[in-house]
Amino acid sequence: MLGYFPESVHADQIYQTREKKYCRDNDIRMTGKSRGRPAKVTEMNKEKLVQEKKQRYQDDDVARIIVESKFGIGKRRYGMELIRSKLKETSETDIYMTTLVLNLDKVCTKEMAENKAKYRVLLRNAS
Image 1 (spheres, rainbow, N blue to C red):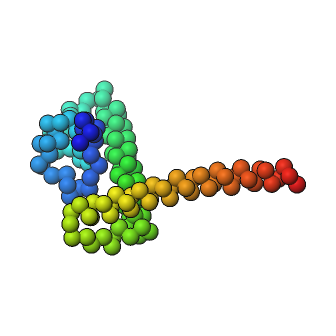
Image 2: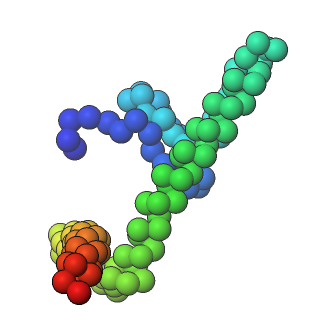
Image 3: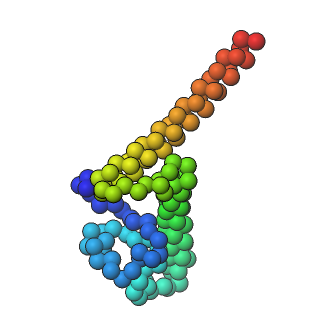
């Protein structure tokens, strides 16, 4: 890929199976409940373990929800659900182009908001 592995993988529960050897071997953290025997809870570390676990689940869920919402927007607004190309390369090109348009739309929306605010100030000063 690009020479490094991600810190964590945010996937649905259906993909969080026992077959996570690849992730474990490459020090990639899977989101969701961990399997096996939990760490021993003592009075000293009980509150800390609970807080860390809650925060990790919350952070992972937020990151996963953001990514999934972008896929949903791509399907609804940009026609990603309509891709029916026969060749793998053509399908990948369609997906890349849709993602490019999605990103350009985001950049243009931000630029337009900045320009609108700038011109609003100029018009007020001219009055």
